[in-house]
Image 1 (cartoon, one colour):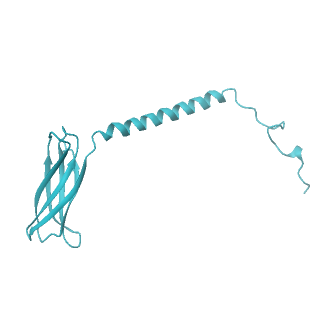
Image 2 (cartoon, helix red, strand yellow; image 1 turned 90 degrees about the vertical axis):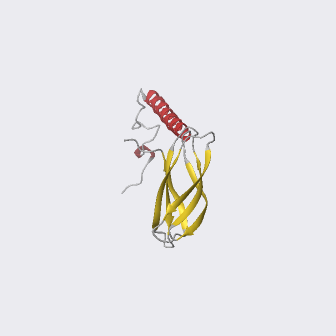
Image 3 (cartoon, helix red, strand yellow; image 1 turned 120 degrees about the vertical axis):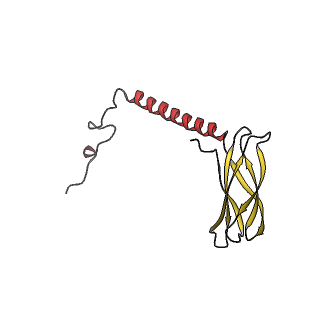
Length: 138
């Protein structure tokens, strides 16, 4: 095998270099504009959905006995929105021993304090908010 020479290599100055397409500038501009539009759409969707976010946070619970537990929690949501919260009572092995649904309706404030007693099938050691969602329409 013979060693390579400068004539064997293709590069910007060689005869084998491919000239740019006459439309390359337009294609690059269209790609940049498309990327900017896509970014704008994603940002708009993220900002518009944040206005209807719902967050629930457990504040505390009281074990009432082997047949119920009371959960205190807060719900932060838009003031005019109604949500249905699903709450669970848990045993020591984290199995579900009670379940309840609580409707939290519109109010003058965005953060509401809620207290609910969850009936249990056996003694619970903890209670959690599983989810708070707008009610299903049907």
